[in-house]
Length: 405
Image 1 (cartoon, rainbow, N blue to C red):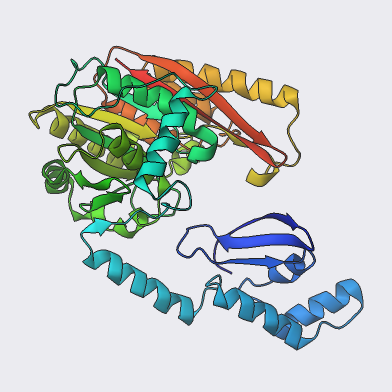
Image 2: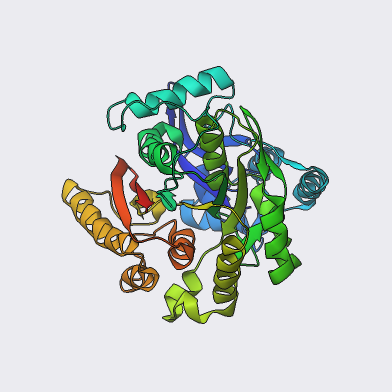
C-alpha cells in the first residue's frame, strides 16, 4: 500500500472504510467493508497472497479465497493506491507534466472551494459577515494603499468550510493595514521532502486569474542557497497550505496583477523535537533564515510574511487512543493559548521549547512555518485576533489568526 488516509464511510446501504491517497496525487477513492481492512493491513510488501491466506486462516479458521484477495488488489490498483510499476509510471507522468508547466494549477478549486469566481467571491464575502467573522470588508480594488502598519500573520490552512471566518479575521487586518504587494507565504508541507525548504518559480492559478510568483526574490534565494531549494518542487503540486492563501489573497485584491507571492514549503522539524535540539542549531535552518532576512531587507519594497499553519491535531483520527471530552477540549485550548503567548511575543525559541517539552503531544501542524516567521519577521509584537477549535467524533483541529505589527 501507498500512504493512505482512511476514515469511516456511512451511507444508506453502504458502510465501511473509505481509502484515499493522503498526498492527493489522485482523487480516486475506494470504499471497503470494515473486515477488509484486516486483509489490507498485510499489503506491506512483505506478505505474499499465500502468506495472507495463511494468516487469515489461523485467525478465523476458514479459507480466504485467492480470488477474493486478487479482487481487493485490483480495486486498489485501479485507484493508484498500490506501490507498483503502474503507479510509478503514473507518478513519472505527473512529474513530467508539472515540470514542463510554468503554472501551478489550482488543485482544490471545485473541491475545497468554489471554482466559479462569482460564487467564490460570495463564499468568501460570507466569511466576514457570518457568525464568528470579523464584519464587513470593503475590498482592495483601489491602487491607493494604506500605510504599512502590519508586517505579517499566522493564518489557518484548514479547509475553508471549517475555518473560513478565522481566515477572514487575518485578511481584514491585511486589507486595512498592509501596504505590501509581495507576500512571502510559508506553507506547511504535508508531504515528505528531502530538504527542509522547497520553493517554486511557477505562478499560481486561482479562480480569479493567475497570481504571479515574485521571480526576483525566488531567484535571489536560489542564488544564495542553491538549486537544492527546487529539488522537491513537485511537493507544491497538491499542497493546499499555500494554495488556500494564494486564493484568498487574489480574492482580497480582486485579481490585481501587481500582487505577487513567494511560495515556500517548510517541512517537519520533528527530528529536532525528538533529539532535544533547537532548529537554530541546524545549519540548513539558520542559513535559510539569515538569507531570507537579507533578501527581504534588500529587495527595495515592503514584503509581508504569512505563515500558513494550523495548531493542535488531537483525537483518534490523529493516532490518540480515545475520543475527546469537553474537559479535554478546554485543556487543549489553554495549552494552545499558552503557546500562542510565545508567538505574540515573537519568541521563536520559547515557542519551539513549549512544543518540545511535552513531545509535541498536541501534534502542532504549523510548527516549522511559524518558527521561520518568528525568526525572520521585523515587528514589535503579535496579537491573537481569533482562536478556533473544530471538533468532531474522531478528533479536533485548532487554528488561529495572529497578526504582527
